[in-house]
Amino acid sequence: KETTSKNFIEQIIEKDIQEGHCTNIMTRFPPEPNGYLHIGHAKSILLNYGLAKKYGGKFNLRFDDTNPTKEKTEFVESIIADVKWIGGDFEDRLFFASDYFEHMYEGAVKLIKKGMAFVCDLTPEEIREYRGTLTEPGKNSPYRDRSVEENLALFEAMKNGDFPDGSKVLRAKIDMSSPNINMRDPIIYRIARMTHHNTGDKWCIYPMYDFAHPIEDAIEGITHSICTLEFEDHRPLYDWVVRELEYVNPPKQIEFAKLYLTNVITGKRYIKKLVEEGIVDGWDDPRLVSISALRRRGFTPESIKTFMELCGVSKSQSSVEYSMLEYCIREDLKLKRPRVMAVLDPIKLVITNYPEDTVEYMEVPNNQENQEMGVREVPFARELYIDREDFMIEPPKKYFRLFPGNEVRLMHAYFVTCTDYITDESGKVTEIHCTYDPETRSGSGFTGRKVKGTIHWVAAPTAVTAEVRLYENIVDEEKGVYNEDGSLNLNPNSITVLDTCYIEPSVKEAKAYDSYQFLRHGYFCVDSKDSTLEHLVFNRIVSLKSSYKP
Ligand code: ATP
Ligand code: MG
Ligand code: MG
Image (tube, rainbow, N blue to C red):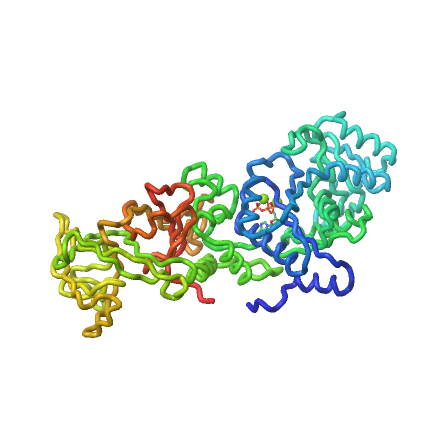
């Protein structure tokens, strides 16, 4: 997709500017503080922030906290941190919808005075019955013709706590025969005695989303209120509310398709279950796609931004390959991160003709593709570790790595030839013996002969021991995300813990969120929850191989 072509929202905004409908673009991200943000929310944040920035406008973070049942202060804090991290810079434009409760109440009173809202005593079941269906029009409530005075008195009494929860509601008076069910006298206020995280017990009536949201947007001067497709049918009600409350320059609602990713789990219900059953290690488990999980895994805000640009913005529902996100993080880290040697499945290699108690330093570029990253000194010694898969007793054809009698290059060091190996009772190789050729030192200009294989290594005396966690998709869509009984068909190999890996000493001081390329293995990030200087823990962000082609 061309990044220069304009998406349909940009086209709407530019037309609005040209036609003089608005000068200062204002957008917002309006999360409900009832859970952690995930990659889908990141799309909404970057879209809204990006539009404000592109058109010289402003971007608000607004908590849509009008439904106290599931809201928690804990989520407010995590959401603020996530929005900032992903790059949604709201400066000091942080708002709470609950700060507008008074204004919303006055809006409802205004509608009553205009004869456009009434207090209804029907039970929830009756309201549902009267509402009709897609094919049948609804019926007017018997309370629809209450006088303005009576409605004003009843609504005030609702606010004062004179009626039990659920016994009355305030409804907009629109059209019970509208083909759009949302327009059939929708409920705009309900009675519910709930303690709100911001307003405490001040209110026992709360506005419904469809009434509250347009008011929140209008108060803040939002010009383009961007939401997901399931609200398309609510737009006539949104427009009705801002029109009847007579806001000047009312906001405009625009819908786009939600982001869906393959091979991940985003449903709150499922994640909650995985957390409760201890299958994942919290909402930030690196196999999940909450923003905190992506951060912990080692994704960068830049990579997520590139990913969203590749996805584009559209009105048709589709799901995006997880491998595309992997492609974006590889591209982002490729020239920015040091490339170090790490042995994940170690086997000892002894260079029998190399002096004992000697450590030699090899000058190694920090990133072969980016000279600006400079060089470092990597110690080399008689005893090294190499990865088990780089040695075979009986190699198949085209195996150019180490086997008895074969010569390979130790990356950035010498040529070595395998002379012998030791096995335990089970036949497992425990040690490899080699000789080295001092003339072949890397950088010496040696051209006497060539070898076909190059393998990485870590010097045993100075190696840093680390735990490395390898991840695969938590579910596989080709095999089916769900079992017959509706439970998740989890990939049993979604995590592999390698508890004794050896890494070159340049990573010794690695801190939370530091990331590296481990040469020939992939990109790895220091785990922010479990890693300490005494016990380093790395998460594999992504391997080097790609199944995605841009
Ligand atoms: P969830 O139930 O997954 O938490 P939600 O819609 O309840 O999603 P809200 O807190 O209401 O979450 O959403 C805040 C904003 O994020 C809304 O504008 C919503 O449209 C947007 N959003 C939520 N999920 C996605 C998604 N998958 N793709 C794009 N935008 C999304
Ligand atoms: Mg939510
Ligand atoms: Mg929601």
